[in-house]
Amino acid sequence: MSVKRRRAAVERVAGERELLVAAGINAVGIGMYIPFTLVFFRHVTGLSFAAVGMVLTVTGLAGLALMPLAGTAVDRFGAKPVVLVFYGIRTLGFLAYPFATSLPAFAVVALFTALADRSFALVQQSLIGEVARGGARDRLQASLRALQNAGMGAGAMIVSGVLALWGTGGFSWTAWANALAFAAAGLLVSRVRPVGGPGAAAERAVGAGRPAVGYRMVLRDRPFLGLAAANFLTALGYSALSVLFPLYIATWLRGPDSLTGAAFTLNTVLCAGAGVLIASRVRRSGARRTRSAALGSLLFAAAFVGQIVLGTVRPGSTGLLIALMAIVVVYTVGELVHSPSGGALSVSAAPEAVRGRYLATYQLSYSLAGALAPSLFTALLSVDGRLPWAVLAVAAVGAAAALVRLERHLPDEAVYAEPPVPVAAPAPASVAA
Image (cartoon, rainbow, N blue to C red; front, side, top):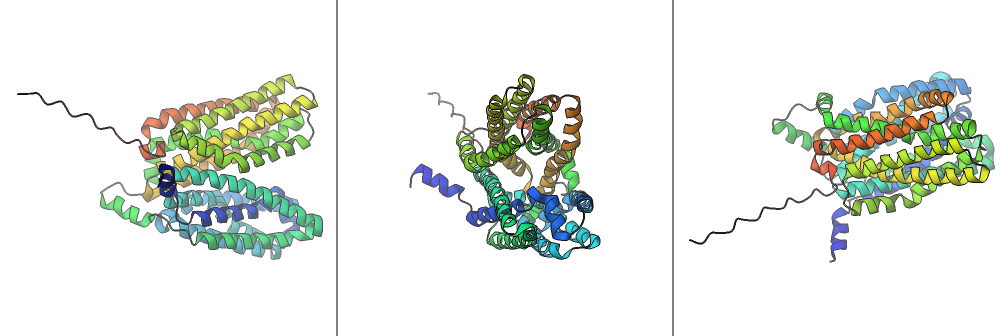
């Protein structure tokens, strides 16, 4: 067997195909309602937009508040059972949505579903930690992100076709199709075999006389908290495409709305088509995860500086399109370089016994950035259209510097996809008698 084949055999994960297919199906389900959230639930429930928006905001915040409990559940029962429970909750929730036509009924179903939706990412990250080791984690991260982008795009296309054929009445059928998608994904995940259970890891930690596991342990881990803080700075940049791009194009650049659609389409196509290839090149280069994540943040910064230049020059329509698409390419490459390395870094930096709690803390950095982004961006944009991009560029550079600085304080198995093998010092030459 060649070296390449042996390496591929070592990286192969039991149940990998099922895990990836499940992630793709899950993304199709999400894509069928996320792009049309308010409209989707307005027609499914018959409630007003104001009522739907209020319920989704309140239940979304409640879902965030319960993320720490999800992390505790992962540490106690393992990620796979919790993922299956969440798929079951989402299946039942979308089956019930078309019947939740009163405000109280919709609030109950939305709360029930939000508890699973908000914590799903951290639980899935924990599952990657349980089924994969070393460089296989980076590869799975990249594959999952590519499938998520492709699946969400496919889901949006499916619901667009349904609405074209059956009108808004098709939203109810879409809700039930979502339920079917989540049920199918759960069945596939049930076939995945974790490498080791968190319960056994917790027993080893206690048996070794280590500190009691819990969120106090996370709060004492300053390097990991620094990692989460650095991710918060980068996560603000992740929110830029969906929140800041459309506002900036419409208000500061005075460009057509079609540019926003073009930017989203290009980002989605690149993520789905080039994500695995770029992540594979980064992984094979042997770069430290901290360095590749930092490079992704610096590419974000370059894209944000490009927006400042674009907003200063303000070229004509043709020049605007070309420049904006070039900026989106740089932004997307930064996303594809940062995401697999950053995800694998957080999973591998978390002690196995408390991985769920650690990743719940890390995932909060994404959630807080997403919650803060709309008000922050709009406030800065009202002063000057280039100001939010300047803040994002500084934040991205700060995140890159923090990642490099944290490198020496993180475990080797987190920093390196394949930890370096120490070289033994040569034995001293014998002296002749």
